[in-house]
Every structure is written in C-alpha cells, then in structure tokens.
Length: 144
Image (cartoon, rainbow, N blue to C red):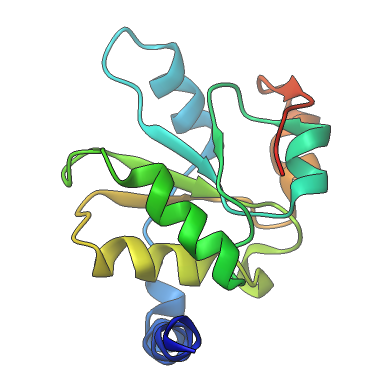
C-alpha cells in the first residue's frame, strides 16, 4: 500500500515535469559508451520481453517502473551507485511521450538523491530509434 501511495505521488509530480525530462540522444550515448571515460549506468526500465529480445550492451534490467516491482528493482539496481553517477534509463516500448515507465523511474531516482539522471531519447521506440540506426545491442538475458 505504501508503494502505491509513493507511485501516486510520483505520478502527480512527474506530470508537471513531463516536458522537462533530461534526455540524451542515442548518438551521444553511443559516443559515451565508446569513450575510454567512465560509462554511465544504463538501466532498462521497460518490459521483460523487450529486454530479453534486444537491449543496449551493459544495461541492467530493472523492470517496468510503472509497477511496484519495477520500482523496487530499480532501487536495488542503483543502491550502491554514487549519487553523482550518470544514470541513463530507457524503455522504448512506445513513443517516449506516452511511455508509462520513464517518468516514474526518473522521479524515483531524483527522489533518492541522484543528480545526474537522463532518459535515452527514443521518440518512436527502441527499434526505430536505436536498432534501425545500427547502434550496438545484445540479445537475450536472464531478466525476470
């Protein structure tokens, strides 16, 4: 019950922030991943079938942030990260402006005190905006 209350509060506050999601473009993320500098923490906050199909290499599966279990998994995934670490969350299930998972994920991370959270800008979906551009991916996983 407490998690549902938190979800409702997150949803309320994220509606106001919907247009202000901090984003990173796919080409810029690819450049960061290829650089010798520290990589951002990549977290997939979408549905398991998508992650098991194809996902960004080195990304961690947290599960859909629109569900209590996904938010709990997201908390676990970032528990040991420094609060100033760059974190990039992505889903790609649908057009970004309608994704049920991104805003709750960003809101939770900010509520937890993470200061460098970004959303991978996938305006259409993961296939059109990542895979069709030839960006790197991995297939399959032991995701839930």
